[in-house]
Length: 419
Image (cartoon, rainbow, N blue to C red; front, top):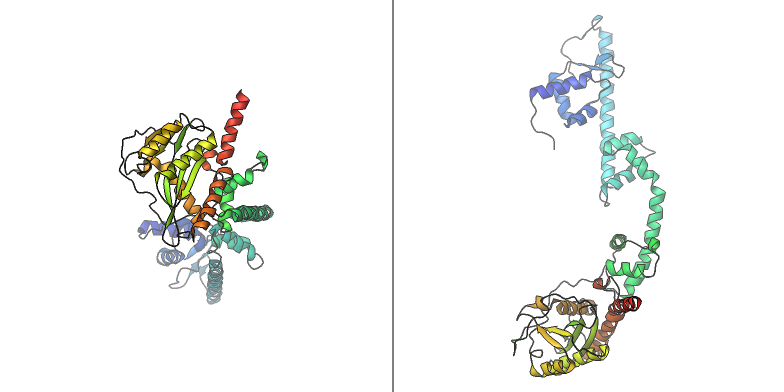
């Protein structure tokens, strides 16, 4: 930002700089000093000598100093003819300066239309390129405050930019095809899908995918409203917290988390989903859907997990303090399957964050902007389809953007290789 106050010495030094610099212009000196051209002209009027240095080093008259009395040259007093010639020259210089300022103002007015197109620097380059035939490049670059070398480098890179834009258009089409299949996908999962089975040298960077998606208006779904999905229930008996918010496991079938979430229907009723999620791979090992929240719902989900794994003996199952999880029937069922129960603190959703996150993801990606399913049949069909896709195809960030099943298969393959 320019200074508001200048000392008299600064003003006199500025005038001296203008008058002593060969070929100096008010515009150039004002830019060097960081002052307005009108300000410098005022100083020249007040402190100037009426002389300046021409480009060839000769002393000449300055058109910016008012004349008071006859001008005395090295050859004596100025003649009338010389005075007329000088005044005409000064007048011509002032007209030229005025015409130049008018042209510059018109150029800047036209350039202003370019500056609302996003990247301001690129817009300036583009303006210069579009007006090469009308004005000199150096003049345009100086007026728009860009370096000529930068403009020429930008212009030289035009073929490269064109090839990149063409490549981005092809990539955008591939992204759109993947996104049309699952509109909940964001840049990380789409990047993983694009790079699946592709040689390393041909893989696409996730930052480029995100940029192309943003440029073409392709976005994953984000739910903006917050819904409370579980209400803690007082426990009938104390069960230790064996997980302590560590939702990891060294291998499959060792540690599970589970929860119940409601699935709202248009008629005001709900279906309920009980889950059993493996902490190693985030795989949904078992689930059950019903129109009630009785203990049979969670025992069925755990039984289905047992059928998936073959055995749950020695595994830990972590839940909240919902009444069905603290019931004696569920405790007996866990003992029957060889499962050790674990529970977080009462009323603390963070102690079962993995299951809570799964429930939120399910509703966000299936319901999206809808508040409920139209009926129970549609609800069961859509939820079932998503759960199957979640296990088999949906790429999970925890699994390095593999699906949970493929993540477990890679673990099994590693064990076989080691053996």
